Image (cartoon, rainbow, N blue to C red):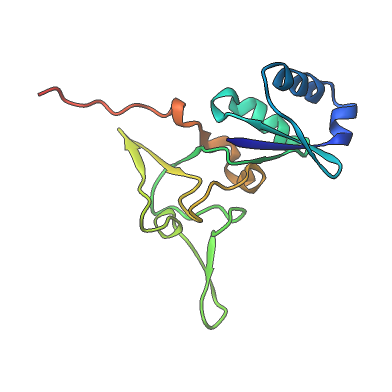
Amino acid sequence: MTKITIPMSLIDTDENIQTLAMSALMKGANASYKGEAVIYPIESRFLDLNTVKYLDSVGAIIENYSVFIEITSKTDLVPSGLIGATTLNEEDVETPNTWEDWKRYNHTFYEVDDRIFIGTNAHLGKDLRVDELASVIDQLVRPQDLPQRVTEEG
């Protein structure tokens, strides 16, 4: 379940946020409060990327939103703004990581034709928050939007 935390100040001032919040409540979301914010649990399949990008751009925090990053090559360097883009060794020397270095051993790339995708959970074992994905925000793809592998019928 995706968790969206929206500061009360946004709900009070942003008409787009008001519309989204009202829609979520009308569709059965059970909002809760934490300090000066409202938390909406929403199933990821009901959140399109444009809405998620907008929420992120105005300061909402989106957690547990499972998406993939489309990359060009497994050997490309991870963008510097992404968690785990570099590794620090014992001598405090920082080394840039490739996507192959970035992912955990128990995660795999999803490859279809010439396209390569990696889950945002492949580095830490849990999905990164959307605000942590700023350097790859335009490369995000929802699982339901991934290209399908064509299998040979035998």
